[in-house]
Length: 607
Image (cartoon, rainbow, N blue to C red; front, top):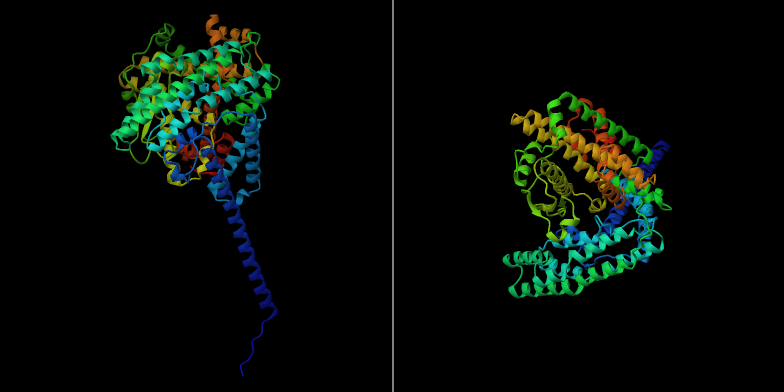
């Protein structure tokens, strides 16, 4: 007979403790996995919904949507409706509520960071949505009446599906513009309509961007660019001749029967809204304008600083830039004499290709290299129809999964050459928007990041970087001139650099004065007069632009100053381990993001 074993009380307690520990660990892991799964589900649905709800945005974000789990969608150009805006706010609130229920400490590190980013981004969007009719989609300077044709002209055709999607979007132009007209009518009822001068400017654009004569002649850029894109598919064997001819005919028909009437109807509708009694003022003159401006500057720039602190930061920077100019003028009297004449510096390079090649060479070792296939860039002129309404230059963002082909547009009407072209190409190309976009997209895919990360946008993060590297390019230009033995010209470039910074800083301060403090035109004109801008036409142009584009200058310049503040903190935290290269890697790898989140990341990371 076998002896029965017995367990002591200690053994029983020990076993109980092990069972409880195992159960606790199982519950712990289950809870962690539960939060992770919920986060993946929330972000996946958010991304897919945003992409499927705006085909134009999806096309510029993804070259091959099917690779990101998006297969079935109806091509849509989302217009405005009051009910749609209400539903959008509800959806945002629901997503925020779901994210707030998660425990970031139970998520993977990268997901915890994305969760913080999304919550702040959605909170900022929700704050803005509370101010109905304060935004302006038909701004005379950057409204959809001028932006939509550019996006359509550069809509890449990679397949037959792309062509069919494009034509369906073109067929919705009338409904889209009709919804924007409805928005303007509701703005008018709310007492927030733009002045008659702005409406007249938009109406003039409607009359000239698409004309019957150009369409009849077959010379409109939405005809010629469509033909070029169809021809590439034909040559690639992706379309037959019969299919190509059919698509060409449909495009011409839609341009004449949908797009042209859409512009005409929008222009005619705006005539009825013109009210000469509405003054040209900033947001500060409206009932909730000051509060809206606070929300707008946070959303646009990504800075969490209060407006008063932003103002102090700008004033301090203005004084520093002014002192730097005075010091250079005092130290180099010969250069100061030449600078006073407004003499143009003869730049060593004369075309964009040479300049981009030089910039690419000078950033080596200071910025992380772009991995993968060669990056091609095509510098193209802006269409004649759009020269009056576009910036001197701009870069069209490449899709996440197709960064080999890139386009920089140069407005030949606003001809820029020499140093100005060189620094502009640094801003738009290397190491500016093009470089930042390609590096981010390829790194994003290599790290297998959550797709929802692509939904986060902060103008301050992107444009601040472009201004930051633009100022670096002035230093590159000075080095280039010194290499040619032109020391005095190199000094002139440095004076121009500080003057450019001073101007952007001044205009950012004026933005606050107009939109937050409700400064009048006369007050702004007096400030400009103190800085040499004395004629009324120039003062009016500055005042009008800033009034029409609230937060535009701070988006660039405050973003730049936030980068400098972040860089200074990195130098303090990293000490001897700091390098510009390490900082650039950190900035590029952790964005797009608001600056508070970047500062928090900086405190968590080592160089």
